[in-house]
Length: 481
Image (cartoon, rainbow, N blue to C red):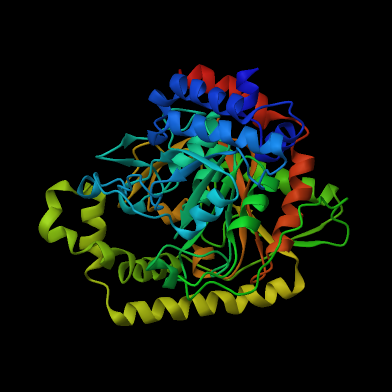
């Protein structure tokens, strides 16, 4: 029974709390017990606060009895280490900041707390969120609950792993190149990259249009519930949009009249056969719901990889560069490599990266005038080792080890370049190595609802085999304890 509680969605838990069928204390206790058995192997948390969380759960139970429950009352929340949480450490997975404690909470986190969510843990990241995997000198290697040899993804790897392992109910992530969607795909959960400006961001990266903060959960409805609470203008973020979009969580009856465009490889990527077959099956499922499904040519090529790197180099890498002088010996090897290689980037490179993004949208924008959404794999493989790092990863594609840059197995970063497009990553099946695969649903700029409506309809049909719940509990026990 306790394992079943650990895999409740927030929506299900709230309904049970409201009917007094379940107590927030019981749910929190179940997560704490499961964490004690799986966490040493998975390593999803930097720290946990059991006594505080249980006290908050008891207060939430009293609120339900009093009829004063808030929208997320009593729901356990795992907070990515990159976010400020008042009174707690924020290490950025770096030895440099291992003792840093914040006095206040980031806006996105505070809105979840104000809605009644209970923070019970911080989740692991690679140092300064630099990798699509999740390991650091400070916190060690975070592993995928489905297969401990495989990464849960990064940089929100701890959040994805915690959801997959059944040791939190909801979690938060950040995404500057896919850091929400990569873990969502590899862990078999749902992650949402909102359009730029929709959610208040972490300064100074609120001014970086590649950068997004958003929800991660085990269902589309849960991410929508979280998104509705965290979005909206805030006076600490000049880029936050005054328009407040409230996502309708009602599931469409079918997809009749919908037109879907899709690409398997974005024009230049090598795709593992498991990913290919699961993506085609997902498209067939959408077709069976009534959608018209058409393959399209985006006209993109691998030059967009260099464009993205040049953009990151003159912002993200520059923010870390001063650490090389005073803290080089404390930094991870991949951090040093990233900073040093970014130094050769010029202002002209940066400007050309912007021109590349414009050229990409010159094709993609008109395409979404003709189609409701665009669909593609989130990742081209699930065979990414737990210790994958810069500059090249040794990943498994079609039975062979391939050496490639991260952006050649992650199809997420183009939609950071096209940052105003909402993107959901959804599970699409299991690969041959037992690790989940995912698809991305991309909608036109600032049209959050269209992406969510498609995802809700897809998820209801996809859930029929129930593999995401029962088999993950079994796999988590066998591989993580």
